[in-house]
Length: 269
Length: 221
Ligand SMILES: Nc1ncnc2c1ncn2[C@@H]1O[C@H](COP(=O)(O)OP(=O)(O)OP(=O)(O)O)[C@@H](O)[C@H]1O
Ligand SMILES: [Mg+2]
Image (tube, rainbow over all chains, first blue to last red; front, side):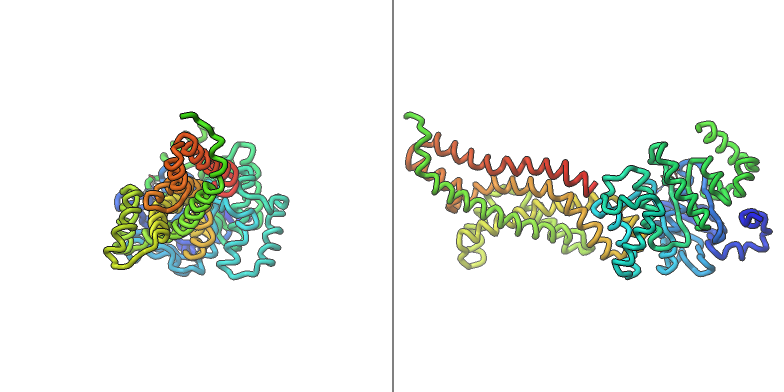
């Protein structure tokens, strides 16, 4: 049986168990004390989940990922990871409380954000060497292996400016994978790409999905969302409006707001 | 009086000596001033109002007053105020270094600030410590981006250094002016001096364009 269906069909009594991986508990976040982007958000994610977050522009999808990556603070609620405190809202704007848990999360951004003054290999090995204190040779070996897997073995000594958008984004994914994260966050990683490069990046993500990497993906590509998600989460107004399997959310949305949103985006496509 | 450029040749060696003084002082003050400017740009970012305030005052003062008055002040007033004698060379080196420090601190500040928030975010996402981020990511990119404006700053300093002739330093300007006065051939000598300044400065200004179009698009954008 598909594990994703188990999660979705699980009765609320089992929510604790479901929350053992990532659990958002009544998370509140507002920018400048007025623009509320997470309004008492609850979310449970299992280690074998691949969440796709969809929602209107400005609904706080990026904010959610940035909070999970420790790039933004929250003003209320808690986030647990493996049942341990990961992010707490104690002093009205807290970030990550556990560096160890933080290092198990990786993120890929819309605009690649590679380090332009370092080669592809330089981009890959900096964090494992400086953060995990690994020796250079083993990092390089690992980097080569990873690049080969992503079809970039001949780009080792290139600078980011010499790569296409799709290649840059695959390098960005490789850079995050170097730290062996348990959870990968993807924020519209194909939106800045030319259409012909979208697939090469999506294929890499599908590859990770096959290896059971836990992921939270923000995307406007509903086709891809349906393909990769174990669970689709529709956010609007700082809350989760609806969630379920791709078939449930796309095939038979329960909430009017979800239907309205899907009508709009599917029409655009 | 007839214009005759051939009279400059016997004076070429002296003019070259003047050029040498100009180049040496410019280079020395450019290097010292850039180091000072870099430190000042960092100092202005510290969370200490006293430190950042004092540095801001220094920068604004040196940017907001004519270089000539700075040269004069340090040449004539400094020794009086401090009650010590300062050799002329040392005096102009202090002036130009302080001036260059103020100018380049703004250059560095601009380039440090120009590093996008996304680069900082990427570092946080990778779990890099603040010091690692600054040393390996922010400084290298900021320094690369600072190269073209720094080169422009140096070219400006090279040209403005002609002002040190006014306190008697035997630079290119000083020597050219003296010969022009004593030989009564201003057209030949002042033109020659201008051409010498141009011949040195022009390639440097071209270099700025080259660095911008080649190096930066490859390593820093
Ligand atoms: N650093 C910030 N400071 C102030 N407001 C912000 C900040 N970041 C985001 N916002 C605002 O918060 C709201 C949610 O932004 P967010 O980027 O999370 O939305 P999103 O769902 O990712 O939108 P999109 O689909 O356009 O990427 C928006 O109105 C945005 O303008
Ligand atoms: Mg977004």
